[in-house]
Image (cartoon, rainbow, N blue to C red; front, side, top):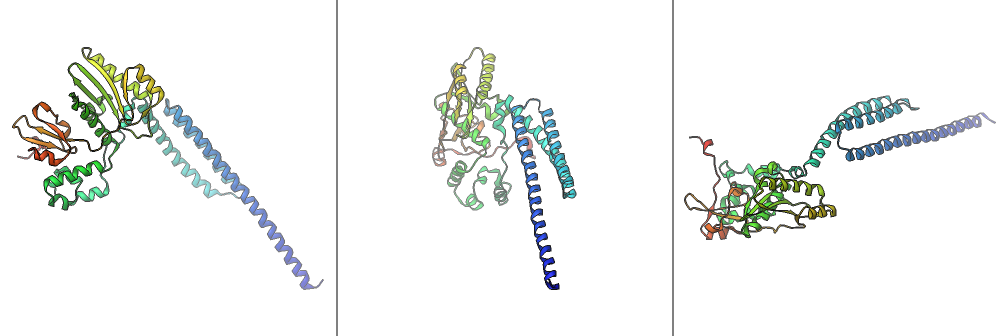
Length: 372
């Protein structure tokens, strides 16, 4: 064998060895990646199991959150050791994992405690769920729209629904009607939807001759689940209204809570003949329906609100007899009580109200706050 052939053979052998080592390295790398992925998957599965357990056992949440934190601290410690001690150590990666794990555990622990507190309170008092979106926050588009108006113009609630040009150029009847139309069509918060639903149910009872007290609107958290109290003579009806998505279900805990507040009302007013009605836009569970029947609570399931019902309140002042109408978004709307025997009424359009001699309500100002 000549010199050239000998060197060629050595080179071929070297290339063969390199190829084999490359294959072996890839196999080893793939095995370690697979092992790491299995570790992560195991941790994830364990985490999901603990979360499920936590949901089922909310009482005692502080120690449960600590146990949750400790469990994942152990699992993350194992992962750090794996990265440090594997055949090709990743020390820097393990330090990053350790640091991020500490931050994550702290955040997870605080989140879990807060979550369990909220869920625990909601379980004790189901009506609290309805207040999750009580605060309406203006969108960026609305904020930009408000900038176009003067401070005086912003006192008029219709500016929330009109452009500057519409507000300043349209006659009052068209302007107010356009604002009302957009009020009905614009997306609303869950809290406002619930409030409108209460108004609608109350409106229906007013049309039947009942004197309606809108407890939920005025007392908020303190209404104890009594949204409306309707009276006709010595007959009283305590009503709870829940305008929920059709995909949600009313469960027995809501019926129990309502029964409790009706029982308290009866106990405080033994001379009154009290009936209980539960209005909802969705359905009840079978068990909730059975409990309601046993507890003598009348149910109005899948009770939908009529959109754009006659909501304009036409009121006559007891002070000077002035005729004033209030739109649903006006400041004093919920304080106005319609008394048919005095010639007051609800109507659907601004034109109808103004043709009958009513003018739009001015914004009320507290005289104590007006500078002299």
